[in-house]
Image (cartoon, rainbow, N blue to C red):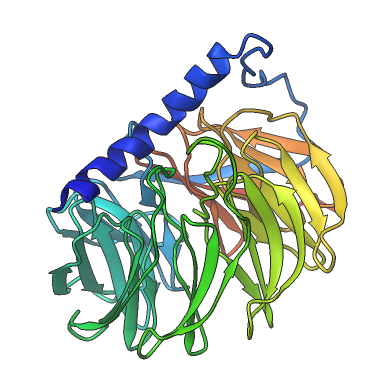
Length: 388
């Protein structure tokens, strides 16, 4: 492991503290505290369905998030365990011990379950029975779920690289690399496979499309220019996955912009100044964003026009959003899960987990909202339909 790879995660961990120090040193501004949660009379009924757990890490922001192929739910723990769960009841279908310090994944597709480690290992399992198929080392920490097709696994590492691996045996197919600024947030955007392309955001504020078969660059678009006097001011990381709907790409970055791009060319159709490192969700006519300040925003999907903004969760360190049945679901730094009305932003319901931060967006499968806390609790909720 190079010196650069050892130093960079430390910088990411220190960034939050550095931002707090800067805020405290500014005599003209008070530190903005998290909003306190007030008593809530639920407008919808939420039911806890089941609870499971894997090993977590409360002090590291890891890219461990449940994934599903429709048959099972797959979860990974920081101690190396990867488990397939029955979606209906949360019970184990199989469990595999990899003995790796897993930090990104799992990614699921083509009959494979793939995860990456803090040391740069990538391991692939058979989705049906959990049997290990291969493992390799890519050399950089993996902080995002790999993208998996039937023939190619794409892995994003913290050193700005996209690795294209043969899904059958893990051998190298191609490598694409972007410049990494000296100071970045701790996190990386997951790659997304669409047709014969891979789309991914990077720490330099660019969205890049590469050919799935050989890694050749198809286009690259700077979504937000890096500007400012200090390295902190110049942060424009894109650390959340792009979302693709038809021929449109939606993306948001930290201290940057939310934007809609053309899938074929990367041309920006619209953009709005928004800061978010946790991501967005796409509805039929709106884009929903959990901002860096803990506010939840709704923008028009076709033009980016503001629709509503909800500040009741201000500075509560929100996860990325997910959509379920006309609601926007986010979780916060104390493990609370919040349901908001997708049309108005009104807070509808709140449920708890284990009191620990939820860094990654909830997952919605078969009407269940599933969250994984940073300590490793996995909990499934279901919205109860009102009786007619």
